Length: 489
Image (tube, rainbow, N blue to C red; front, top):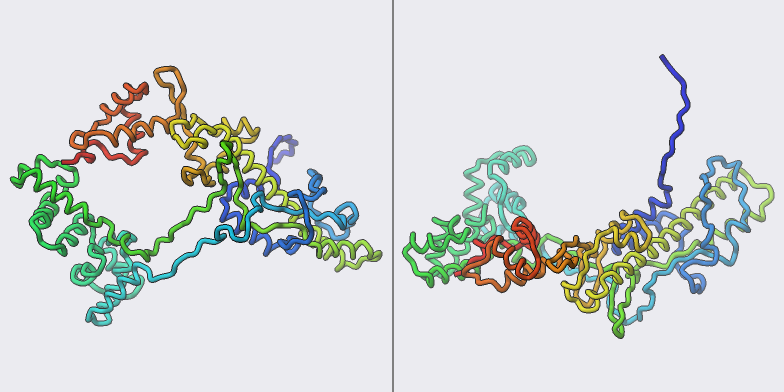
């Protein structure tokens, strides 16, 4: 049975302008510059050329750019705009970056990228020096294309045979592909490419080395006792092969000179090196911290004067035709969009500067000294309360932005850490504890490396009562292997 009823709901929705602002806040510098360029291409009412000198980020009419109750006009007949109030002749909203005080001889704005052949091109050029028939050459090329960036063939040969049949309409056998792999691709430079695992990669390199006593013994140990060698069961190896500690030490040195990732050795690898462009820069000037926002590559934006002149023309026209009304509606929509975008950029800058300024003041001692033990425990909520913004806004800034400091460039989110209480009742950052853990591991006797339990004991002696499981978690976060794998002869 159908029923008609009335329901009342209270919903909170973000306006398109708020959504646009949040998206801009989240973008790092390079992506933000690209977004500005895209908007310039899409909206003819935006202009990036200087038309007049302005001292402020916005003109005097930056207030009341929007009406909270504004709704886009859907009817052409409703277009009746007071041009004098909407856009005056001498006021053009504009945007300038905070960091616009760079001289012409300052550092390059763009990072040059070198061009060259890729790792796969390098291998294929060598492959084509062998005398292979057309079919074998095509199969070998396909095998090279299946190598990963480390130079390994991690796929099963059986699956490559299937791929050739389904995608290339080429039918072959596992035996033939294995023959091409072992007799041709694994002969290419750098030595070790085409290996199916680390063991095979090391053996290929040892086979090519000068056959000294250490190299021969290393080959034997890797071939027959690779797992024990990898897990550093040195006493078992000494007993099994009846060798001295000095002999084993020479073997270890021989293996350490090998390259476990031969593909990385090629300078023209296909992996793109991403240059980090910092969003903020913190400098120490006469003992005080100075914060600046990177915006040198972002064009200065303002509303197009040409579009304002279209409004002047409309203002002087008494009897407007239907086509003129359509044109005016289009112009108004583009001008609205331009104003919203310019204001969103200003609000983005204000948000970024407010957030980073609060972080800088919160961690002032660290930024002045560079001592990681001076980093205070800090969570997103701490900064959100200082700047009176939502935690999600602080998260958008921290998770995607880099800051350049006198001590290096790093993600802002790395400054955030939980707190723990030491034996003196003081709150300390987990980063401070990790730094001390690193120092303890660096100073340990590598012949008798400290277990997690002993590391916890050392930390307790320094005033940090931490459970062994927590120590293990911090050790893994710092990429420190277990004690057995840190052992040296």
